[in-house]
Image: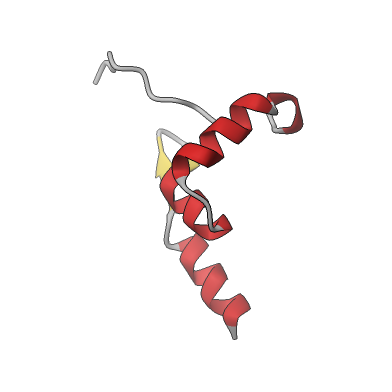
Amino acid sequence: MAESSDLHFVEQRIYLIRGHKVMLSFHLAKLYGVEAKALIQAVKRNAERFPEDFLNLPRMSLKL
């Protein structure tokens, strides 16, 4: 039953933004049982292990 609730958790936290499927870092971190800061640091340290578009940090000057 836990598998079904994990799937529901993930499905409810995937957003479609400008044609891209996006999951926020704190939701992904919660899924893996770590803090968002630790997840982001791990991705930065091991960037070669992740797809190029895995982590996109927001820029402060967004044009709407």
